Amino acid sequence: MSNNAVVISGTGIYVPPHTISNEELVAAFNAYVDLQNSQNAEAIAAGTQTALTHSSVEFIEKASGIKQRYVIEKGGVLDPTRMYPRFEERPDDQLSLMAEIAVVAAKDAMAQAGKTGADIDAVLCSSANMQRAYPAMAIEIQQAIGAGGYGFDMNVACSSATFAIEQAVNAVKSGSAKCVLVVNPEITSAHLEWKDRDCHFIFGDVCTAVIIERAETATSKDQWEVLGTKLVTQFSNNIRNNFGFMNRMEDSDPNGRDKTFRQEGRKVFKEVVPMAAAHIEAHLGALQIEPTAVRRYWLHQANLGMNQLVIKKLVGGEAGSDVAPLILDEFANTASAGSVIAFHRHRADLKAGDLGVICSFGAGYSIGSVIAKKR
Ligand code: CO8
Image 1 (tube, rainbow, N blue to C red):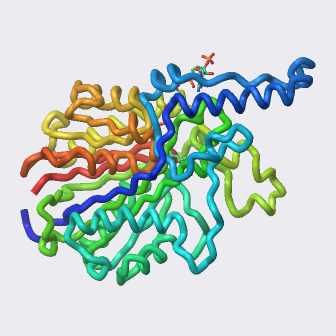
Image 2: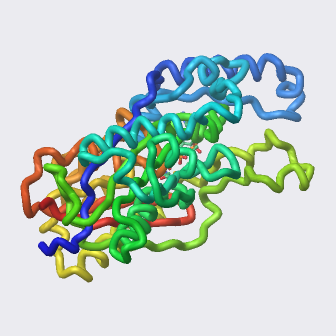
Image 3: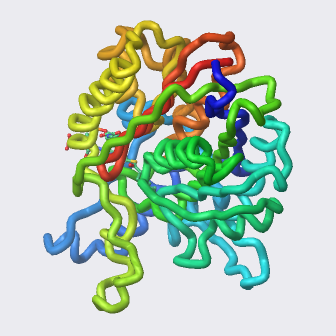
C-alpha cells in the first residue's frame, strides 16, 4: 500500500446513560393509550374518533429484532402524559447537548488514533437532525476539542455518516485537510414520535466518531485503508419529517404528526433491500472484489429482517453472524450511526489484508458504502 493511501485510523462512541427495554417502552405506551382512550371515551363511543391500540413486545421483537434502546433522558419518554424526553434549555455560552456527546465520541476516536485536537484540521458533523440552524454544530465541536482548519454540518438522514466519510476521504486525498474528524450525534429520541405504535420502538440515541487521514501520518495500531466509497440517492417520501424553519410562516401545527419522524415501513423495507444489495454488489464489482471475498459487512442497523435479506442476496450468509454482525438488538436504529457502531464494535478480530464494507441505507432514499482493507 502506498503512503498516499487514506485510512480510517480510529473510531469512537458515546453511549447514553439510560436504557429502555421493550417491556418498559410498551408499558408506558399502553398506559398512554389507556389514558387517551378514557379521556376520549365519548367521541370513541360516538364513532367520531378511533380508539388507540396497545403495542406489544412480541411484535416489536419479531418485526424488528430490537430489544432495547439507549436514550439521553428516559423519564419524559416513559411519562404517559408526555411521551418525549425532557431536556433543559442551555444558555448560549454553555456547550450544547449535540456538541457535548460529539466531544465524548470524538475523544474516544482521537485516543484510538493517537491524535489530539491540534492534529485535526477538519470537523464534519453529520447526522439526521441538527439541534439548531447556526452556528454550525461542527464549529462548536471544532472549538471544544481544540481543532484547527474548518468545520461544517451535513445531513443525509441515515446515510449521514457514510456520506461524510466520503467527503473526509476526498478532503484528505485532495490535500484540503490532513486529518478529518467525522462525528454523528444522533439524538433520535427528540424527533421520534413516541406516541405512534407503528414506530415508537424504532430509534435510540448515540454518537459515533471516525478519524480519517493519510497513511503517512497515521500512527494507530488499527488502520483501515479506504479502497473506495460510493454514494447514491433517489427521492422518496416514504420516510419524511416536515419539521423546519418554514413551519411558523405556514401557520402549521407545530405538534402536527408530520413534524416528527414518519414512514411507510413496509414500502421502505421492500424498496431499500434490493437497492442496497445491488449497490454493494456494484461497488465491489467496480473494484473487482467478489462479495464472498469480503470478511465482514457492517450494515445499516434498522431492521434484522432487512439485513437478513441483504446479506443473503450478497453471500448467502446470516445477519447476526460473524459476516454481518448486529448491534440493533442493543442500540435499536441509531440513524446514521448504526453501521459505524457495528464497525467500531466488531473489527478487533480481523487480520491484515481482511476486507470489509460499511454500508448505510435509509431516508432520501440514500445509500452509502465504504470498502476498507485492514492494514
Ligand atoms: N405493536 C403491535 N402491533 C403493531 C405495532 C406494535 N407496536 N405496530 C404495528 N403493528 C401492527 C400493524 O398495525 C399491522 O397490523 P395489520 O396487519 O392488522 O394492519 C401489523 O402489526 C404489521 O405492521 P407492519 O406491516 O407495519 O409491520 P412490519 O412487519 O412491516 O414491521 C417495521 C414494521 C419494523 C417498521 C418494518 O417495516 C421496518 O423496519 N421497515 C424498514 C424501516 C426502515 O428501515 N426505515 C428507515 C428509517 S430510518 C432513517 O432513514 C433515518 C431517518 C431519520 C431518523 C429519525 C429519528 C427519529
